[in-house]
Length: 509
Image (cartoon, rainbow, N blue to C red; front, side, top):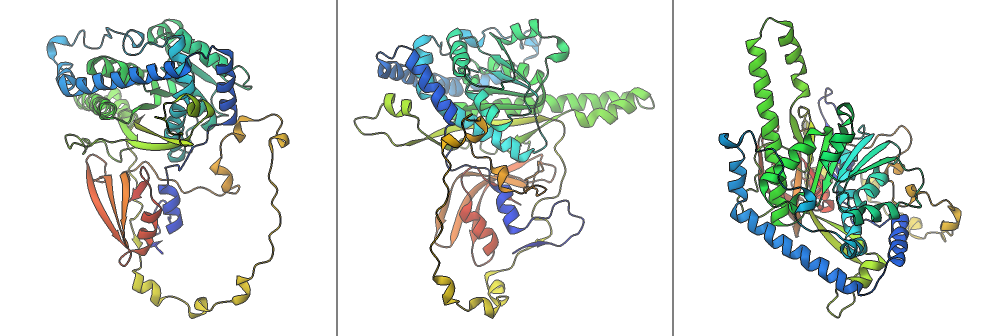
């Protein structure tokens, strides 16, 4: 067991506290009952002739577009990324020439029906996994105004409602497909206590209708959208527009493919570069206007400028996986719905009751990264020999009476009849209920002391090997991807934590 030595540490972590704070992955996300029922009712109302052909057509179209996106990544992705900084194009580089509805997949009635039947549960679970981590890392963050760009049939909205059901008051949905917008309204038809929802065809329509003072949102999210734009220049342009509408946090989610990961990595680098450039420009201006009141105000507000990565990165430097042949992505297992098991291709074999959704994401926040102590600072861990030496001999005595347990009482199993209203809060397991009132959950802060486990840990005997992306400097300015080997004899406490760690969890430094 480890204990913190310095009394001035901000947070006192025990061994169990480290495990709880580092846990970010979820074994399997069940689909809420209300969402299942809404999807079934929507599919029953629509025509279901040749549904398997419609699903197969949508799947082939998505796979074809992934191949085109991969070719773009290898062919002109880097060149177009360099062209946007060309001085000759400064006046026109940030004007979006092709909109989201003009490029990529066009969702009409057939494509929307196939998407709701097969893809909507997977997108919901990926968004739920990312937003749940945002809530755990930022327990005081309660967004009121939210912008969902490329909302589709409302997959992200259902995840938002499951995470922040009480704080969200106003939601703006941007979706150019009329068929998708109709599906979104239909699925929410029987849901009560909804926030105020406004729908727009594009960002330009939102800017025309919404006043300038109300355009900023506490949370802006775009899922599975950026990869459908035809060039990296237009993807970065759209990301800049979304960042301009963000007051606090921006969430971007893309497919867990080399192309999707490359898109996330390029946009992450550009937004960080852009904000650093603004900070340097402001510092230069404040030096030139020294001894004036404006200089004092600028220097005091400089802490409010900038941007840093909340997740998955623990640093704001260059991605260490760039040009390595691998790509950063994560996996979330989800329970398959009846429509997925019915209409998806199975190659003559019955489908499993679950599927794995691969995704890449980044969460950016305005401001400067908090400079806090690292979680293992001052902690002293006993070796296996030292733990054995400290054992109490009385603990080794076996009490045979405890081996004969009495017959357990029958446990009460609640049924749906006990909850006639079917509140949406009961659709998902709220882990906050495990902690009693006044008891705080151990939280992994936003400092640079928490690394990220990339890929699944490899267990060989009493050694566990993990690939971890972590910060190499206290200020989080640089990062590295290293392979750590945790042995049981030297550090049994961290070895036990490594045994319970999964792909996507955090690792303390």
